[in-house]
Amino acid sequence: MSDIYPTTSRNTVKRVPKRAHYDQETIFSILDAGFLAHVGISVDGQPFVIPTAYGRKGETIYLHGATTSRLIKTGQEGFRMCIIVTHLDGIVLARSAFHHSMNYRSAVLFGTATLVPDAEKEAALFMISEQILKGRWEESRLPNAKELKATSVLAFQIEEASAKIREGGPGDESEDYALPIWAGVLPMQQIYGPPIPDEVLTPGIPLPESVTDAVKGKG
Image (tube, rainbow, N blue to C red):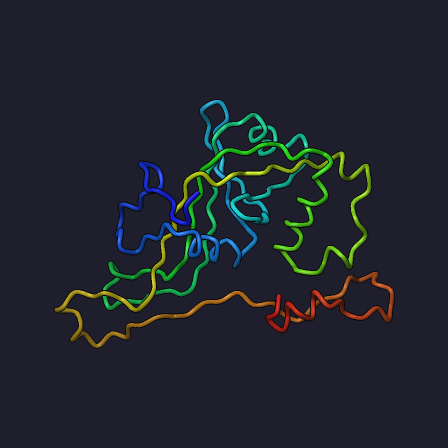
């Protein structure tokens, strides 16, 4: 596939199209900056949106869950799915309440999923773990046979996608610029706080590298 996703009736951004991006570099950068997605599915005509962790490898998004979960059961049957990842970068405060907005980066993905074979399941779970906190997998006890049996992983193939990004300050009406009202952007970012040890943690165990790297912003 080209590094530009073709525009279709589903992925074309219609509201403020100048903010749209269809290139893989932009879309993948949004996906790689997070690990929490909202997955849209339809079961017997009832829409559901399910928040879940994910991992990305190329154009494949890995999603995991209990083998009996609605997401897994629906996905493995080949129904089309929609995945959304959003990062909120700031609240845009205009002089007019009507023009308040948000700065954000969002990616919307369309495609279908298949069930990851048992022989590839652990590698797929590794991808999800690395997306959440790089290096933690190797610091942990790996899943045993019972845990792997109770867990399924979907491999969602990106077929169509688009990104939408808003940056910058407010756009007020020309007559409002003279109003004595503060306007601007209140930036937002996600940061890790000081680690809180488990109450029953054995004394003397140091912080693992994955946690210290995350706190330092290297994760």
